[in-house]
Image (cartoon, rainbow, N blue to C red):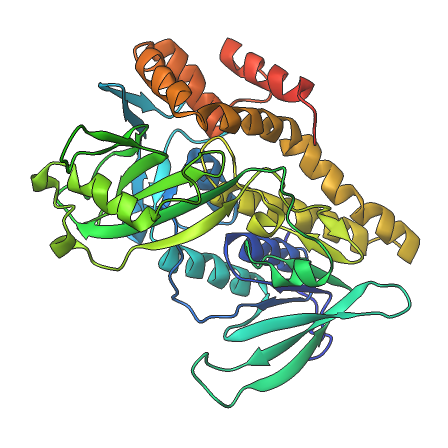
Length: 436
């Protein structure tokens, strides 16, 4: 039975402060509030607000939405997809999401401005206190212990000259403030340079392809504008139908590519779109918003995930899957894990016992994702070489059984117990890989 949330300690005090109301922050706040804790959820913008994303959700993210009680019916505006269509090496292969006991056999598509707001409102319904237009600045740190005890913030519109400075206090703070994570940096947690980083750029076009049943991934991006020979561009592309008359078209590139810092990725996206069939509608005249980009922090690129009263979730902790650039599922999963650890810690009798419980959080994360992310880092290094990527596309795509295995591996979709031979191989590999 769900407990009713505890009474607010005061307007600016709580059991836990969550900074950032993206998927990671809202999920954390939802599970904390559902367990009866008083939670402040602080979001620097106002909903609805745009985020750079492919908007495609795999069955992992779908499972999280179901757990949070979100209505994911088509009537509620969700577009379902059956699997992944992969294009490369002159081959087009359509793969359905696997049938598993642990995950549904479909994914979803939803624009991030609406998606994020739904999660934030669900956290509110559970009892979290949401403050929009709340720009968090420096942490409040106890001089004696070095622990975070709250945050300084400014309330008001971004354009407003009149901003009210406030302080919020709580014994625990969750950083869900994305890749930039000013809060983590202020607490001395810097990005690890030995972890891969990605960049995604995307835009929307009005298009007749808007109701596609499959997420589409292009392993080769060609610039066919001439003069001279067609040019193979680095990275991978995607086309996701949004079901509302538009397609989300974008590309991702990894910093293991030699071209990572050299190229203007907006121009690369334009060149790729120009190579597509005209009747798809991916032309400048049909573009509904400007091209925008965002960083993809991967494979635990900021650690430790818990220190001195601060827990990192989602992009703030570098949770993006290096195999496929998926971030939403891992943001939501890490939020649920963090909330569970905090709830258990809050039930302990002494500060020492609470601290012992909180120190379990990074260990659970490493047990859950560490081996898989290590394999992902090796994969990223391999495909950073365009020749390897080209051979993999040409040879791999002609073997459907191999590609079925690859889909399970890339999307991290296996049954942990009782699965098929592919599941057992993938689970075995992630167990033996170092959990760094």
